[in-house]
Figure 1 (cartoon, helix red, strand yellow):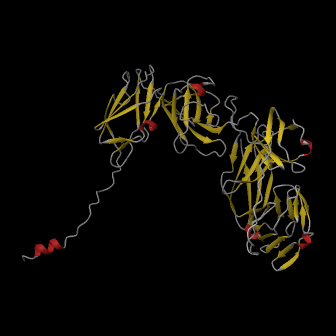
Figure 2 (tube, rainbow, N blue to C red; figure 1 turned 90 degrees about the vertical axis):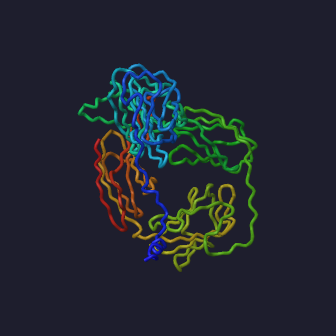
Length: 544
């Protein structure tokens, strides 16, 4: 019996203390001076006493004071008390709202304050009006977080540029805003994502939004629930100008403009180049153009007068620095993967898989002048070999093979060296080999759409997007019609229409000074699933 206690002690298991359950209880305000929702406030400090020790976590950045204060607020901790003070003289007969956000947390676990709003009034009562709404991106219609929504009590357009708002708040993750404790009145509403941390619209590329008309604050006792939607955008710079230019060696010149070009005139000012003989290639959206010289131009300088719409500029170009050709390295193994190219740069339209219903293209960066020696080129379909001559044709930048591809077959195109020559005498200094497989019907599905859109007396811009939100088809459509996509790669798609209200072929953003909202954008309300060898039929009726 005397041995038993020793056995009990030796069998006891030692366990590391767990420290108990994680503290998830936020700190609470036990007392304050003045009390929350006090009136007749004359002092420049409030004291908050908590039920536990707290710390400050970016409190100055998290704090929102509405109406805004001119000078920063000061925070001072002493034991379980926090003193918040300011230098500003408060407005008379005004209700102030302090929102602490996540700036006050408990010491142990960093839990934010349970109630982060503190209200007081310098007048005899607390204002109780409010304005609610949501903020979305004007183009993709997604909610926008951390947008300043600002109220001004005067209908003066210049206020957002230079004057602090009367009230303001930030949107939450769902894009919602709730401006509370407002004095009764009508307000100008302006949304801002600031690039410099201020409350003024003073940077060109800042994202903004606004409501065209003044809106009225609503009593909390009203039964009508009115919410407002602010569409955010970045204003286009309406001034036309030359954004950039690139010299394509001594062979050409690329000009990029700020906006789509309506009319352009280029005049040589030094008489060493026949500008009228340049050939031009415009981008699809008409905001950039590539000019190719008739032959390599060995100029010391070019001075050009450029007139684009209502814009005039002078461009001075020095003699371009030409890259030296790289020395050819040791012998390269033949066969296998497509070989790296030397000399003229050529890129195939299909890498890996060629759509069986499309032409195969080989694109040059510079205009192609001639193609010779294709009787030595090879076209291999599975195990069958034939000459390229007669199959391949020349277009401006492209060599094209129009061929009834066999679905799922393997192909190889072999082009002899020095057979493709561009305008400037450059050629493919190596033989070129391209291998690919043709696609199959099972890789695609079909989409047939009937649409009926609101008749605004102008066409709509119709866009089909893939699952990466990349536009794969764009066209102008009338309010009512049918659209067919016979070959869509299987996957998820979406559709949007842009209200081209000024009929210029583009979606136009808003313009604050002109009180112009962004053009409307509407999305088909559900994703479109394109399945293998399956036809999907949809009807989209879009009301105003």
